Amino acid sequence: MTRIGSSDLSVFPLSLGGNVFGWTADRDASFAVLDAFVAGGGNFIDTADAYSAWVPGNSGGESETIIGEWLASRRPEGLVVATKVSQHPQFRGLSAGNIRRAAEASLDRLGVDAIDLYYAHFDDETVPLEETVAAFGQLVADGLVRYVGVSNYSAERIREWIRIAQASGVALPVAVQPHYNLVHRNDVEEKIIPVATEFDLGLVPYYALASGFLTGKYRSTDATGQSSPRAAGAAKYATEHGLRIIDALQEIGDAHSASITATALAWLRAQPTVVAPIASARTADQVPDLLAGARLELSAEEIARLSSVSAWTPAQV
Ligand SMILES: NC(=O)c1ccc[n+]([C@@H]2O[C@H](COP(=O)([O-])OP(=O)(O)OC[C@H]3O[C@@H](n4cnc5c(N)ncnc54)[C@H](OP(=O)(O)O)[C@@H]3O)[C@@H](O)[C@H]2O)c1
Image (cartoon, rainbow, N blue to C red; front, side, top):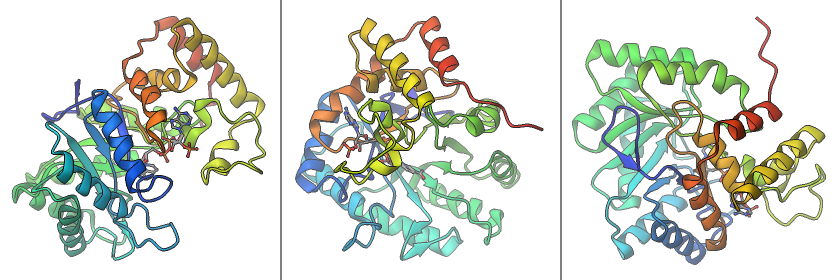
């Protein structure tokens, strides 16, 4: 187990992504995934109020509702549930009133008294940051939220958030959730990790498997004929360079009898400030690889080799 930043939230070092619940996993499949995750030692679940509003017939909140029903039926001990605000079709943006109403709706769907970790999902520059920071602080002061996080924020805006929270004496963020994996490194390593290091923020990267590319199941950029709705997003990485990364993952994984998936997650876990990569599973069968990724320890040479084969060109300044 590991701790998220300066919080006292103790989590398994792999967070189970919830955007599949109510999308590629129906209620029964979602329950099976959640059961397998917890049976294997997992305790950290990531969702958002907006999941999965993009699915025809859905209106947002489906993932939280499924998680809430599962919590009510299983009553697991020591679970840490993170959710987010700003993208639900009925609760868009980060005005104070919207944050409050969205949080109350999430609490209701999840069936809990407090949200363990509540993220601002995307920055909303139409609202003064002072208003947003104060609204998150008030939720913590009122006991509806235990800890605050930010997702998809620039380094500058994270600094600004922290400056405002310090000046006004409200809860500081403890976690940052960026898009980060072996095929998407630049911005996070150049800008976000330095801020996370400076302010003791735990990094909780999403798309840890590049939507499935880093499982090794996409060997061509042509997604035609692939059944998964994620295929186009994942297959685009299957370039010559992308496939060299997969080959290195396979070779290193083989030395540990570990899958490509587990090896990719282990590399991410080894990066500075990373607390728990987030990855989702559509079926219970996919869960053991995710759990293995939380436990696999790569050597310094193996991590260096993966960093080298996935090397990126720093931005010109
Ligand atoms: N903060 C944000 O803005 C943001 C944005 C996106 C996601 N997220 C969070 O991050 C989580 C993870 O992102 P993601 O779910 O989109 O992508 P991901 O974790 O990179 O990819 C997960 C997908 O890979 C496939 N997979 C997983 N394990 C596998 C295995 N063992 N073997 C073969 N295939 C496997 C499954 O897709 P198939 O259906 O192809 O099998 C699974 O749904 C989300 O659930 C969400 O909680 C946050």
